[in-house]
Length: 321
Image (cartoon, rainbow, N blue to C red; front, side, top):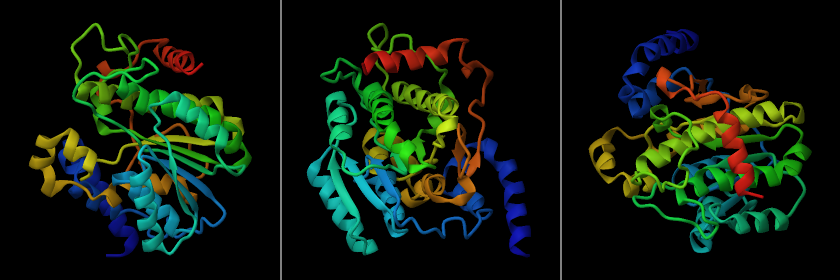
């Protein structure tokens, strides 16, 4: 079978198995989907490109940073732990031979820290911004800014960082912003009601999935607002990957599904493809999974009410003033 026929067969089989979720989101799904990937899509030279990756010291963020550095980019690992960030940077420099890998201290849940980072960031341009940092706490926590921790880390901090870096992204010419969402967002409808989690018992899994839905909507809104700026905004979900975050936040799921989980590198593949490939150039405002745009709703009851998207934007703007 020729490569073209093999890719066609893979896509046909994927359309049959993807609705099962398990055989799509897991390692089986990645192997099936990747059979249709263009093998040359990531044969790119990123020399001269400046890439920022939050949550880069482990898991998908680390795998993304390694792949970008291996292709010649200057990569800045934005991590909330100085020690873990520096250790991750050393590992990537050693593995890739690149000297253009740096660790920066940044806790995206802290709005003052985000502002300081944006003010002090060296250089003029940012070509790629990847929002990988995320939390799934098992109890309600508030940041010093008075924002529930899941919302602060997964939505409000990334919103502020992106807004502050917009001038640098415009300077790059064809910059790309990638938000790493989750397939869990399919279970939730966009809502900013009770964003403080004070009118209902806190549920970490629901809070996480709601913020991941918000990330998808923000990517769409940014794409609409900045279409003329040459910046591509996309969200994606990595499937079910074996990362430290999954092990600690969802231990039962991890223990049950461990043999079927994707590697961090498999989970990061579409992030790197969106950040680096020519095939992704000019594509904006979409939700991606395994290098293909996917629907943002699987159920009619998750569609947001009129005006809810603007309410999300208003909330983020108000919290970051």
